[in-house]
Length: 320
Image (cartoon, rainbow, N blue to C red; front, side):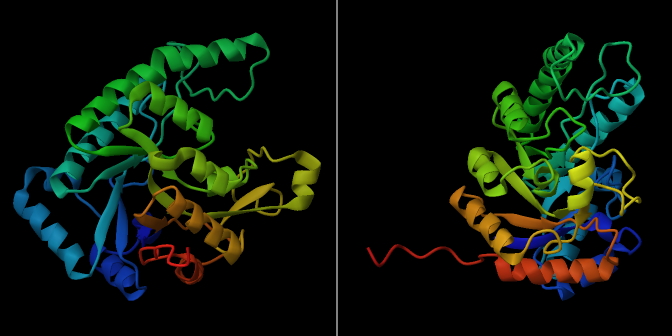
């Protein structure tokens, strides 16, 4: 298993400075945003698609710093009811898949997306309960008319280019937990898998090692990000919270750097669960902690992960 980082964290730095920063931290991989929500601060997708020379130079620069690209990420909503948004995010995804093939990157990460409640809708409609009956009907329509048709076709496109699609389970989108991830994988095929980000599951009350076990080989990539819950706010208002992330004292939960929401043992249990599930790829650090600076959040998270990760292959059971 390797440690890496999702580079939008360093959006204000040049690509050369990012590579030096990541190498100095002792990491082995970078996950690069190619557009949509993560932006594309450290890559020129059009240039790399058009020029073999540019691709060769780009990859050489990364290799010279002792790094690999773990994934290209274009988190977006390609089934947004606003056709312009959907068209833009779908185009970014398709370009990213084609570029991943040319660069030899095995995984493209995005969101499943969320449609509206009808063909006339303007905004996404995330259904979280079956009653009143309207909600159940909307959910059925979304999956039957929008989600499965889009992802079945799109998964086939990715498969044709030799690329796996890792959907990040995220509340607000139709894939937000284990059950919905496996539902879409069953409908669209095994080119569809998961970018496992425990932060989005922790606050939903999910037992992370059990979720990893349930997903097994469908885990294509992993985000290392933590969450903490505020016991008082949860006790008063519950865990569902739509307040701004800037209202830190009032929220039921907050994203935190690894180790600031759950302790070292919890992260060791996650690493062990990943190993038992057969995952031996990259743990890509994603830092979205408003209580820590970028540098301090980055370095303290790495310190925790370096103590939790298992890099070597396991020994045979020589004692049996």
